[in-house]
Length: 491
View (tube, rainbow, N blue to C red):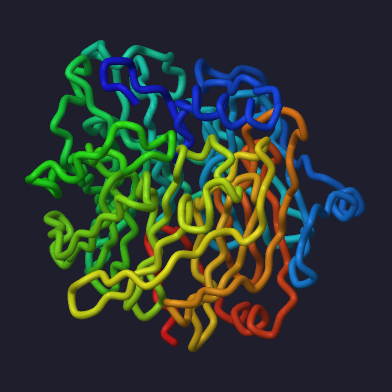
């Protein structure tokens, strides 16, 4: 990525910088390369609701899977979200509802019957990548695409324009089928992702906003960008949301990088964070910050403090996201080598690149233990790399479910930090056998007994896991779930 060019709207982090890397890999295999669409413009048209794939069709499209995991439902992208650049993004849950981000806005699904999810609302509000989180009656969206203003009818506008806007949008979801837009807060370099950290008395919701890739040409996103933004949302009055602080996390500038991370050569330069995962009940957070992984003390929500920092210049290219174990004694960091657009799950790149790094927390320090990577090779036509996942609440074990784009969904046990083992999987298979076409599972999360996946092009998918530990986990019921704001399962 060069800082001189306008920063493209990009999924989490589906960076549209594939270029020569994809061409080189594809030509080596004699494959054609399909152009990847960019997310631009405003959608129009009337949303339709309730679309879903019949169960017999789902069964016929089972893909390659282990005997322990099966696809039971799919609700395809519908209405304006069927557009070629309307990518499905992240997921959040409240009660019987799933909230699914999309480059064109977000959808609300009634999942009371997981085998028959029903879309009850579709909110048109373009602004990549519209990652979503919920807390009480509040929904937060991340906007990392430069817009003409903060409204849902805004247009694309170059980041070189001072009047351009990007940041977070806030909605009232007290009536989930009728979300209401109530506030917006502009943040430096926009909001690629965000993380919720409620105050200990529950009166205020703090939002850690992650963004990156500054440029001297961007009036609201100039280097050095060594911060995160902290937005304060009063729970009783979300319309009063405001920027509360911009703490500096990298006073020395962070990892200088090599400049070629998307080609698989060395680490990214740290110019902000891609994602922060909070564990509010333990006053901890873990930041995945391009070239660095950090552990944070968030006992003072407005002033998070870095307590340890690690790099991996040999195997990690782009520190993308983080997940704690339930005890708060381990962190899994993911490396999104190639930004989600490359076929990195191949023998060419091995088992330690584009993978997870598993770290134990010993005292206040992060100690590396092992890597975990999808154990099945994927084709050069499949974008595949470690992406978004969550813990499965199994007492006495550390088990995680994770999305791998076209590599599908993998469930693995990291109770022994040095020896992670896959337990179940669903491999959706390649979209095309001849061209590299963007797609696959963006996020795969466990919620109240099922795995829910937001697929970039196929919509919301639901999986059942048939094991004894899955039945045990299904007994743990949650009222709300955001993967980037971890709950404690008390066991």
